[in-house]
Image (tube, rainbow, N blue to C red; front, top):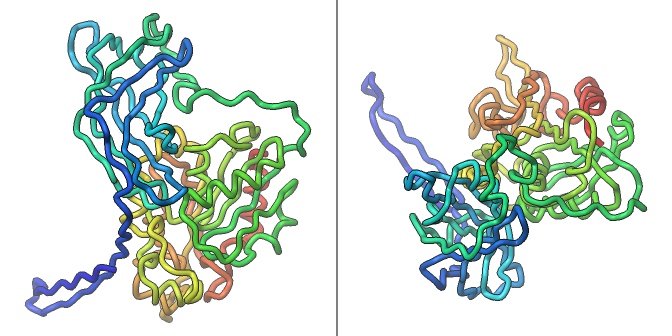
Length: 393
C-alpha cells in the first residue's frame, strides 16, 4: 500500500492534515513485443485478424491479457483517419496475441491502406495494468476482407461491435433463467429472497475475493447449464456481469426480454474501502483482503476497456441510509469516515454511476448488507419484484 499525507492551510488560516492509502498491485513483467510491426490477414469475408508477436516470459499458466488499440488507415483522400477501437481478452498462442476487426469498419472509414495501431496497450487480465504500450505501430495487412472493399450500407451490426457469434448447438439444456449473482466476499444475499424472482437460479461462490475476470468466467460456467440467462447482481457481481458480457460469449447473448443485466449497490467506479484492510475488515471480515479491481484507480483502469455498447445493457440502482435531522446518520459507523455521503456503507452514490448505463434511481433507507443500520438493499421486495418482471431470461 502507498500512504499519502497532505498538509496545508485553509482559507481561514486554520491548518489541515489528511492521509489516504492506495492499494498498488505489483505484477510480473511477463510479456514484451517481439516485433516493431503488427500483421493482419483475412479470416473470412468480414473478419480481419490482427497479430502481435510477443515474447512470453510468464511463469504462470494463466497467461491472459487484455488488448486495447485504435486502428487507423489512409482513406480515399490519402488522409490518415480513425477506423475502429478494438479490445479483447485473449491468451498467447504460438508467441502471438490476436484481436479481430470487422472489415465493415474499414469500409465505413473508406480506409484503403497504410494501416497502423495507435495507443496500443497490453494489460494483464486480472489487474488491468499495462505491461506493453505503443503510441503508434505499423500494421502490415496481407489481404483485406471482401466487406472492406464494398460500399458500407450505414448499418452497424452486432457482429461489427462484438465479433462473430458462435453457432448455437442443438438445445438439450434447461430453458432460460434469471441468475441471481452475489458480490465480493459475500454471504448468501439472494438465497433467502429467491422466491421474489420468478424462474431464477442462485449463483454461489460465497466468501471469495476474485478479480472481475475470474468472477465473470465462473458466472459464465454456472450459466452454461441453461440455454440463456439474464442477471440480477449485487455489489461486485454487477461489474463481473458487465465484464462477462463485454469479453465472453455466454447465455447472456441469447437471452430475451427487457433488461439483460440489473444491479444494485455495484461500485462501477470503485470504492475507497477496497484498498483499506481495516475498513474492509469492518464490513466483510479480516479474511477477505484487498481487491485492486474495486479500488477507485483499479476500477478506472478496468472501465477504460469497457465499450459503450456493453454499458448500454446495464440497469443499475443505488441506495443510501435514511437521514433524520436530529441524529447522526450512517450505514456502517466503521466505514462512514472513509466515504462521502450519500453512501450505503460500502459504495458512494457517485461511484455507483456507470456512464453509458441506465440509472434506475437512488433509494434511501437501505444499506449495502444485512449487518448495517438500515435493511440490506437486496431485501427490498418492491425493487426485487420490479427487477424480476423486467429481467431477460
